[in-house]
Amino acid sequence: MEIYNPDRFLILHDEIEGVVTDVLTHLMRNSMDHGIETTSQRKRLGKKVWGTISINISIDSEKNVSIEFYDDGIGLNLSRIFAKGLDKELVDMAMTKTELLELIFRPGFSTAEKTTMISGRGVGMDAVRHYVMGLGASFEMIPQIEVDETMLEKVKALKDDVYLPVVFRSSASLKDFSQIKNSA
Image 1 (cartoon, one colour):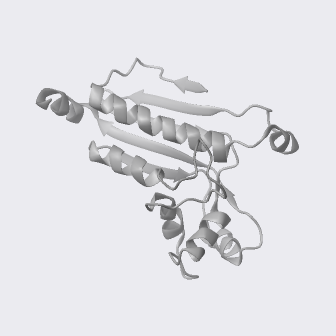
Image 2 (cartoon, rainbow, N blue to C red):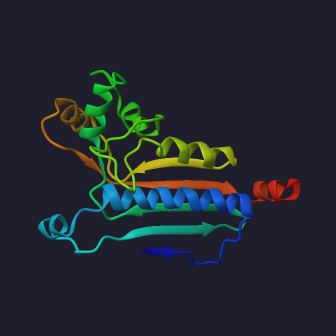
């Protein structure tokens, strides 16, 4: 794992630290269980045999903090997300790319074929977003390539798996967090 924090350490109030720890733990579990390929898959794809999870922390002069989380794995399987959405009657063929991406934030939604000790229970990305936003921070998923209409049609055809690498970013003002500390 790589943690990049070039400016300084980030010190948070206990309540906020707990949420940040829980969020990063959940994202790491998803990366390890779903995102980063097996050693043999990575070799076949010409990648290093070990996967990399990166966390970038930045704080600007206005005390705005941004935490970005990503891995070098294969990315979200959009085809599986769409298929599971069809199975659960959450989507139709007119679905937009934004609606497709938002499916991972629905309560109980999981693309896992089986539950493991690490993940797959459908309690996850919705809870991550809920807790982060409950602190007054933003939480967004940023696609690393554009999901265009051609890609969306390929996903809807359900013939081939289509993967999308993403970055998860949370941003907030540390000034807002100081109010939580003073009210505790």
